[in-house]
Image (tube, rainbow, N blue to C red):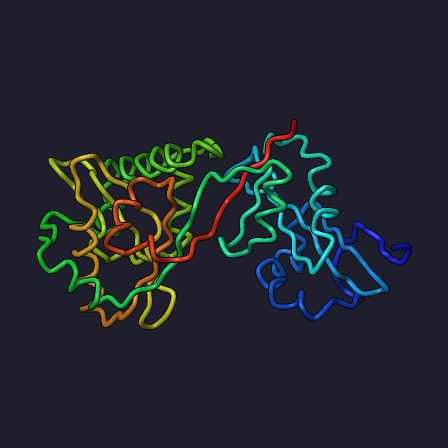
Amino acid sequence: MENVSLQQVDSLEDVQLNALLIEPLQAVKWRIDARHFIELFIVKEQNQVEGIGISWTNPNHPTAKYIQIIATSYMPKLMKKLLQSITPYNKTILSCWEYETEKLAYMKNFGFHLFRKTYIESYAINELLQKLQHIKEISNSYSLQQITSNSRLEKELFSFVKTNYEQTHLHNEAKNKSWELWRDTVIEDTPDMKAPCIIVDEDKISAYMFVHPVGENHVEIGWMGKANHVEMQRLLKTVLLYLVEASVETVEFEIDTTDYFAYELADLLELENKASWHSYMYHQK
């Protein structure tokens, strides 16, 4: 093993990677190229990189250190290095697909625990509407464009977004931001401003489901929230009917098990049959 070394580096330029690392590296390559990381470690064997460990932070969740490991071997060596010091953060988070069994086994050995599953799936809109044919659409739906033209409702909506996000991220607490910053965050995600995605009951915001175009015939639905009496399937059907009229064919959802508003759609989307992205947490002993 004398030809094996673990090094901290500033980039992956001028290093020879094992070809098996190239594809899995794509998920974090943009972060490395943009220097958006805290630490970057490599394990070299015979002058070839066999493992990469990286850590970074998320400004929306300032108490956590995020890590990822891409390796053909030496995963425990990289894991130990990344966990050596997590100060000033109070937790470390590592995520992977449920079928990455080797990584899951190492995380268990190091004391990580599962706190969230995330499902990222696309569906044909017409197929979803077929399942929703007996659900009534919403008559009192409004667009973001309409809501943001009313200062009172605008503040109410994004205060609602702020509260719902904080309540569904209690395991990894969110940064305390003003409702104006939440508004800016949502708008910067370039949502469809004309989609009928907000419910107003008795002049109060009671639900929202933001739509984000990502292609000519494809959209993503991510941000969701509701009051207890609202059925999310009714709002979803209203949004999908609008998308059909706009010639959109497919829709993608990103749904966390900790987001009880969005997870109301789990049965409709048959999430129990889908692969999930697992997020694990480690607290330094």
